[in-house]
Image (cartoon, rainbow, N blue to C red; front, side, top):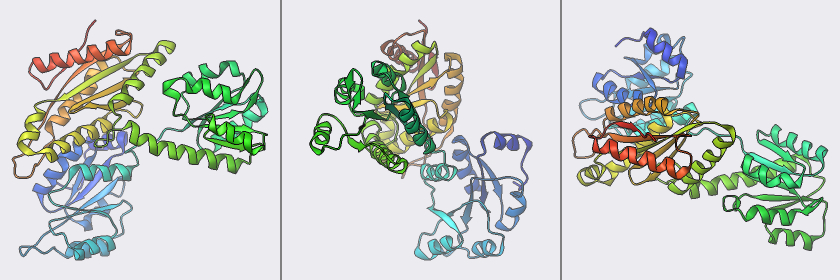
Length: 435
């Protein structure tokens, strides 16, 4: 394979900006690494040696440069590759090294050559994809934190909103206490800033009302007040506040306190709402998100699709190759779903080998095309369990749509029944539920 790039690949790179260069003289290794990387949305361009790399990548930006360190017959590594790197122009893209040899000497040479990661063969593909994602900065799409300001004085509320927006947060305010509960349900904030003294109701009572609703129990509430009586501040904290700020509040102080609280909340939520193996939403959290999405789409006359996936013959994988191989398959599917679906879509692990995806603003016919493409890519991924042959795994899928199925339970039941039908029809296929 030469270092020229086909017109089709150029078009793909312009669309996804996911080009990866692979420097290797071993064609078999190129095939073993390139095939799974392609399935995860990256496009590999093979270059035989490091000296020709600058010409190949002159006009094309890459996520990373993968460098295969050739091995010698005696089990040592070939030193020329590091000479080529040192003599060539330092690449603008991060370098990731692969080697049959794993010792301190070769790792140190890789680091001194500018390496950001080092993988031994056979390559842990999921670990490599994780590293590429982190370099591309798309492994986790960060949404702005939502802060709701409850303040009856419009100038003050506007000032707080401006300060928080300047720090990258999505801030909204409500000045009429009668509209608070509706706004909380609509905006679903990550944190609430609340004035303690407002017409018709005080902040403590309003916090109690909000905390009566199960889905809002854990939202941090920071009280804002002119009150400097320490005993009253302690009382407010005891009755539901997470912090207490005295007006007037400096912009830097406000941003620091809010950011600190949100960071702590993000860490706690990651343990509470995500599956530890796949880092996808867990069953309970996804069900809550599904209910919220149904409510939102009813208000906005929007639509979405729900896809339920189940790995085929997964118990056989665990029993034959062990749970480590099974975990690798689960991680691969979760990674592929995150790669191939949009950042606005929501993905969860429903339990065991079952996954679920909520595709926003997507009719079932389009969802079928999307999930079928993912199904094809996943079926072509090759796993290399220890002591076993090359392993391929498939999944079956059922899809239901809103508003055809008007509530969360109907959607889940319909998708589950369609999934069962796909299994009964022979597996490795997708069926749409019809009312």
